[in-house]
Length: 169
Length: 169
Image (cartoon, rainbow over all chains, first blue to last red; front, side, top):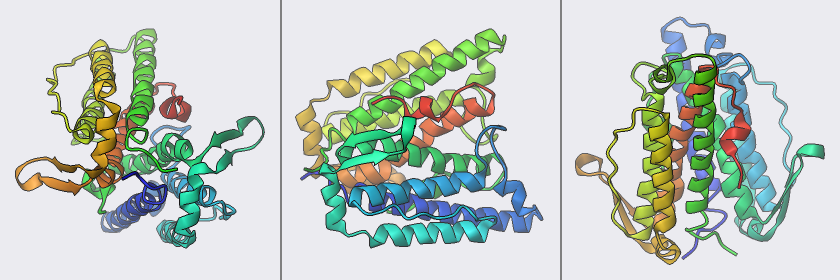
């Protein structure tokens, strides 16, 4: 039995994006309870030249969207980065989850042998097949942003734990 | 073409543990250059009840070690957590890399159909096959600690970027 490209991608993104959604809900409740301005969390960063929480969530969701689209050989949908509050981020995650569930499973399996290109110009990078792309490029980037979103909230006192991050599967 | 359990695990751990090693080297040089006490970084945390940098690295390495051992059906080697400096963490990573490279590839492939148990007592969890264990349990935990190690250093002003985290593959 081998791993399938589908089971190694869509359900994993669903798990962690689901966790992010639940974590953001806890963050919003925390802000509410402690009378914290939502922007104090949404715009929080771990260092001045790092992305704030809001952008970390957008980028994590975009790695899920882009990966599943490229594996499936369909166009990457373009979402404007207009979110400005917790409700906006929840909608972004929900839209992303609906998209990744819409790509046919067989097309994603075929991604194993697809030539995949990311970026453009100097930053263009080509992958000879979806496996290297998923395991060595997409997932590290995805987890990087998802964990940093968690770390920003944790650093700001929101009561969450690793269980919230790993979520359920 | 399907993903193999081996290619989805060992080379991924090697990539990110290699990144962690390079990041820790940069952190050590930074401490040296700025006359920062190494412990100021090694014992830094993002919140009082989170693990400090040193422990995040130990735990990330342990997830790599434990995952490859369990997939390969060999005993998980036990490493004492005695590291107290950057050199110790580098040795821990090197030891972990040597171990994961020592488990036979075929045994790891067979992990796909192996029954895997983690934890004990109330916290015991069973996986019916290595795929769910690797993709939904091991990698989320591994990336969680590896990214948090990065975030602690970034938060403390060490000049590293996402490229250092994703590393080379």
